[in-house]
Amino acid sequence: MYEMMLNKTILIFGGSGSWGRELTRQLLEKNPKKIIIFSRGEIMQVEMERSFNDDRIQYVIGDIRDEKAIDQVFNIGIDYVFQLAALKHVPICENQPREAIKTNIIGVQNVIDAAIKYKVKKFIDVSTDKAADPSNLYGMTKAIGERLTIQANCLTKDTDFICIRAGNVIGTNGSLIPYVIDQIKTHNSVEITDTRMTRFFILVKEAIELLFFAVDNGVGGETYIMNMPSFYIKDIISVLVKYYGNKKTKIRETGIREGEKLHESLISETERKRTHYINGNYHVVTPELKTGREYSNIEKPVKIGHLMSSDIDVSKIDDIKAILKKGGWLC
Image (cartoon, rainbow, N blue to C red; front, top):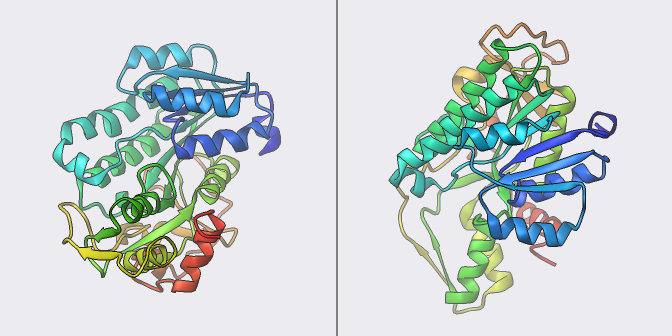
């Protein structure tokens, strides 16, 4: 991986968010020629620029819905693309489906088209477990984004198009952990939609490891998944309430929101037969499409029950405390 990124130009769409910042931090250690952060977040870009203070990073305000803006940034010569840009909030996507489609489908196709046109080496699309068996518009749009990415391998041999899938990334902007802590500190109460709900969780550093693993091993057409624990949301909240709250902190159940599922899946039933272990800690889903690539670095299919649903083999309270400590949310 170090040699692969050495003196290369890397373009990160949606790069000013939590994923993008950690990806940038780790990429800088690999001595790239340039990292381009392309996003709509003006304030986030300013904060990022002040924080990193590195001449190798270039910041571009733009939207993946804008084909001209994309073409201009590709025109300088790009080696690797990480596609992180998306509308991600389930209720927003449910209530404003056209906007979700514009970004998560049309925007992704715009970036794919430019990657093919300018013959980048590798294109990594960051997807979500909600795409595995989608029940809401966000998951559906991300699933289509995955299909577009995988199908792009049939259109060119110059660029390898690869997907990764992750669960909830702990501590990212707008995610569960900072939201619950803010609710405790601001209102001394926390809302939970359903006490039965479970989710897969991963630390942002581990999510970036998954990205790099896909870059290192992907030949085009694969979807990579890391083994990740699942937790009851109520257990995470109870740990945070004990740490940040007091005896008067209340937990209120509000009912499941439109588009939400009680449990998530990292692979779908139809993907089971195409899912394989690779290097123990990772799984890879090979495509149904004939991409012209050879998938020779995978092992035989194995039991993948836990990946099928987050309510299988749910982790305990001590495991939650350990991952929150590792992520810096508990001392």
